[in-house]
Length: 98
Length: 101
Image (cartoon, rainbow over all chains, first blue to last red; front, top):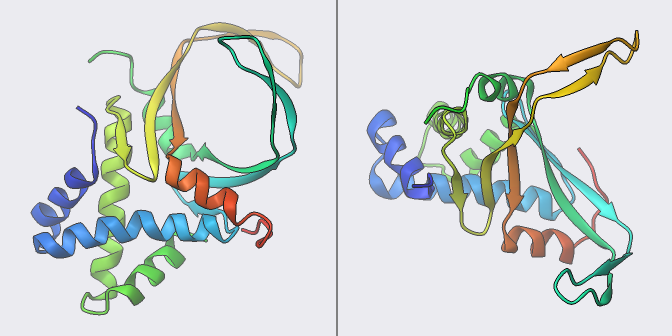
């Protein structure tokens, strides 16, 4: 089962003693604030975790993988995530055992 | 935007909470995210995106300085896939805002 906003709120309730409403609001605002920054062109760097970067891509020819039909891919701005060193190291330690 | 700026912004929007509590909350969320990924648990946040691990096969690499061949073991790397809402919002405003740090 994937971890969701409800799980983050649950832990804020358990560990920090925020009430359920405050915990839920905090989690909502946390992700909304990052979205707001990115929406206004601001990249978000969270030390120890990673950086949400923005990239402007120019248009390029693409293809429908099913039909093979050519469709142009329009110019767009995309979000990419670069993992921070600390998180990278923690994840690399995961040996693939469940 | 940095982590401390994020904490400041969140604090402004929740004036009933002490700045220190907002700081602890942000650290708590980030720690839970890191912990989940470190144990290969997927994270799914509607409208924002999902985080999961991608497997990298073992391969032969090179030391870029010396050119020596080195064998690299298999590993896992975090992957983020932006959600539809985030993708749309970022793209819709691209003509209005330059990319900044």
